[in-house]
Image (cartoon, rainbow, N blue to C red; front, side):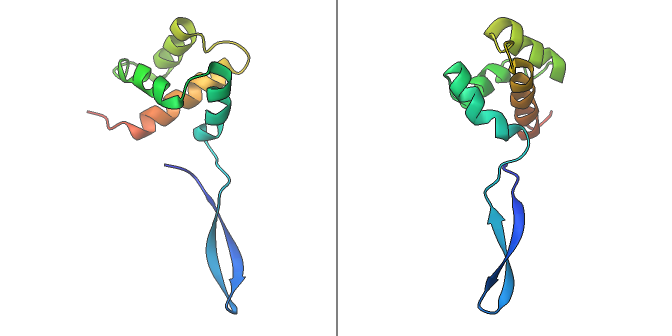
Length: 92
């Protein structure tokens, strides 16, 4: 689920809502994650699938320690992946 900003644009003499393609939230990190680690975010979601029973910060720690998302923006990258994954994954 992507976050979008709404703006107003003049069209046919009135105002209509138009979606702005500015990405906000955890998914704003996705291009950097893919460029930094050379794998699509779907790869990281499949890794997280195996740890979905863990708490948020335990999942972050797993990405950092076992998969190397711990350099530079690593914590932010791991946090963004976990936050997005948990928001998209139904809880049991």
